[in-house]
Amino acid sequence: MSARGPALRSLILAALGLVAIVEIFPYLWMVSTSLQDMAAVTRVPPTLWPETFHWENYAKAWASGPFLRYAVNNAVQTVGIVVCQLFFGCLIVDAARVDGAGTFAIIFRVLAPIARPTLVAFSLFSVVYHWNDFFWPLVMTTNEAVRTLPIGVAMLREEGTGDKWHVIMAGSMFVVAPVLLVFVIAQRHIIRAFTFTSLK
Image (cartoon, rainbow, N blue to C red):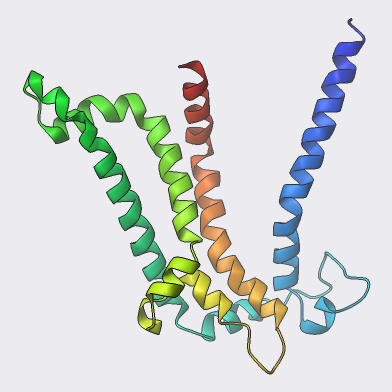
């Protein structure tokens, strides 16, 4: 029994390592592609580590459209939706008014401290979903002034001139990088939320 313990642990760690590699590799490939030129991107066999780092790909992607406006639109849309979800979700506490507490007092003094980990995790997953949302903004917007980052990245594919994948991947980093940064900063809250839920 004692011999099976380390073996099983090693097998689990190997499986988790394999899953981590599968999950992380697409991001590594995207970063690598965004830093190469078109000749290196289409080379066979491909290389993961660029011979020369072409940081100008990010400048080209940024200059190809009003990406600052896209980013602002994305942030406004995402924050607005998450705030509305949290607010309307908290309306179920009206019954607590029998103690004389107002809605906002209940939310900030009672619910927020208790459910903070869960609310943070919900907010993060909601942010990721709506930050990356493509079809709904595509259907609802016809003006470039109100389009979002995913639509802007999709527009980097130039019809008739071929797909400039190094520039497209650089543009994709504008969408992915903020989400990854949020997860890195808030990973402690996500772990606490899942731990809190499992112990309930």
